[in-house]
Length: 415
Image (cartoon, rainbow, N blue to C red; front, side, top):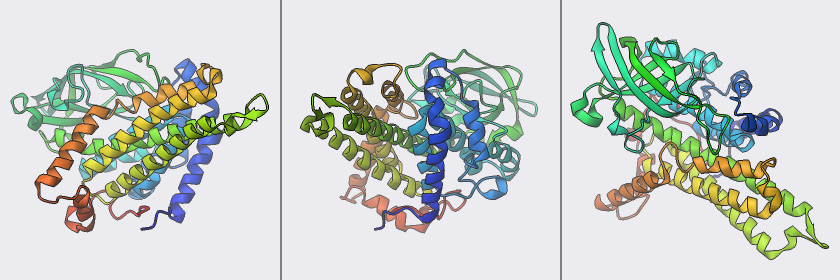
């Protein structure tokens, strides 16, 4: 078992960290204070070839493996969690969904401008009465000559109002529940679509989070993603990659919190003694770094499994559940270790604490992740395996479980 990153992965990680350190970190606090969408950061991501980086080069991608992408989400989120989530939604929830489920004509039409940064993508699933239960969506799509007419309201949409394209999920066969949902690619300038004002949020305040309102919006047939009534499957499969991205965001936030705390206690004294020499302080740091490394290992393993096209629902949910929890705990510890300086709103630590909370909520709350993990675990025992996790290892050895049309098929990971 080799935990080392490949030479290419280390190079991508180093470049992402440098971009984040020099370009994203210096402006993160100001973007947060002013609630300004960091359009410049998105443009820099496009210039660096990070948009659609896991997609094939024939569509404008970079042919990168999924772990390399995860390393980038982590690095960008460490510097600016807002930029991390904009990057993650555009790539995993939007662009990859089009690649994995779109026709060849749709891939050729939509992916190149997304990879070049000419178009920003968003993912519109959540509704006022359909959060964790996505099957309960009430947005409707009614047949019309040459296409469909969509009516409904989506809420808490990341990149809302800023994105050029939205993956909108609507009920096409209301009597069929989750088996009657379809995914549509809806352009921002389509007549009948509008956006609520950006929400005032606790954290990631520079990301645009809005309602998306659809009033008799006509969407032609060539903008149906996948098959009619198969949208719920697309939504769930797409969220696998999204949850890996949020786990990576949490790991990046926790890494920055640890860095801040370690530097602070090394450079501050009480009397003649450094804070770093106090046993209680050292214990806090030990807990933070242990949780960080454990979260990172869960994250990288989930990324590797996903890269092989392996169904790793439990492992992905475990990574998100644990990483988001320890990120929240670690940023709180960071505030405590910095004392009054940690509590100041003009310092970085309180922003990290605010940003960490959302990782326990979006793309599946922690409660949802616990349900997913428990049900998968019980299923393993019920199927007679008897050893939790054994089925995942079996899946990793079975070529029949791999999706060869996945942009991550055959990618190299750390284990």
